[in-house]
Image (tube, rainbow, N blue to C red; front, side):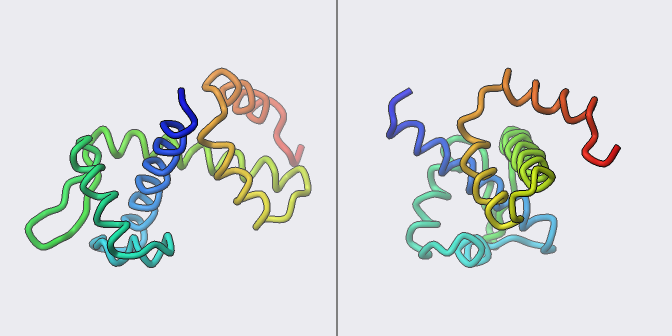
Length: 130
């Protein structure tokens, strides 16, 4: 995968993860909520949402509310799971929470499924507080 394509996929996953997180916090998610959460301009959010809608990951209804499609929900849930497990693992290793979350965000996009599964299995069999 080219560097540009990889960056595009990371960005797509970050948007999906943010929409999922916002949907757990708010009764309705709007593009302005996404802009505020990610710290991006409304114009950038608009371009990203067009792309996400074109890929059938997100639906925007007539009132401007965002929702994840089934495939968007699946991808967002997978990314959030990776982020949570990696962040918790790094924190358990003694990494400060803010650094762990930042590093997990970078790792969640590049770690192979094989490596992530191995980490998950290891953590399941070796709980941090036993």
